[in-house]
Image (cartoon, rainbow over all chains, first blue to last red; front, side):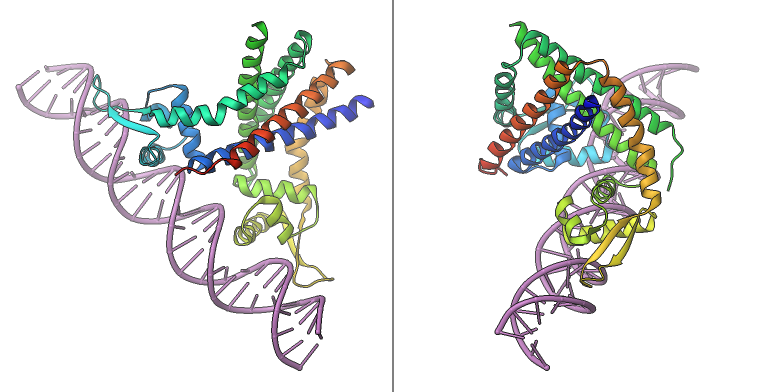
Length: 155
Length: 155
DNA sequence: GCTATTATTTCGACTACCGAACTTTACACT
DNA sequence: AGTGTAAAGTTCGGTAGTCGAAATAATAGC
């Protein structure tokens, strides 16, 4: 009974947390003058720098054509450079610029610091619970996603 | 030290959880033959049913024009009905259909059940930690969003 | 009853996306 | 070496979703 109350509270808060992540991404994109897709691409490039256009296509789940235009925009904005791979001249290597790394630090640096500060309030045991919860939530969510994908499509 | 390891693990898992939420939403939209925006609108309508077009405009953070077309699509798909408000005939009340409620049950019902089952492994104290963590994470994220909004826009 | 305001829709332009066709480069086989 | 095939990106044409602004309809104030 009281557990059910907590459970619905957790669901509500997870939804709110999701929304706050979304708002943060939106603010970050606005700050950098990018659209959400391009910001996501830039994050992927920064995480695996440099990256070929094809790898970015896969990672960002975009068509090759959309990836090309996204790289165009990021290049024009000064956040990435295009270079043909010397070892395989078909490939285009996309690398983040120093401006991109500076933007990353400015946007995400303080988030990490604030996160560390906020987590200081928890002890080892509590952090373990949090980790376990995050893992469990992800597993449940992925199982449910798989369930949906198995259902016949309406429409 | 060991705390820092946990902290970065938490950050990583939060990002993964975010991605799994995103994948779930994508799968739900595909299942129902809707785009992400329309699914978001439908969720908002179901949560506050019926709703005027203007309220939906505000809640969904869309332009009035985009809201009109989103309602058009949801209406064509059989998930909502349009009715002029008898008390104020300028307003259009958008109401979810039984089909929409059935879809909601099919998509989200099992998520709630699975969530409840998964949370059974935690005791009261642990659930309290989880709630507190979700609340804290949201607060941090919103503070960081506010920080970004205060910075001068590039681009 | 006019006039201003509110609520929604329509219209035109723009952005981002996809699939398909195309160009360039690499590789395999003879 | 020479030709055919595959791979990696880009270009092109069409489509979907969005916005701002103008248009339409209904209410409220004076």
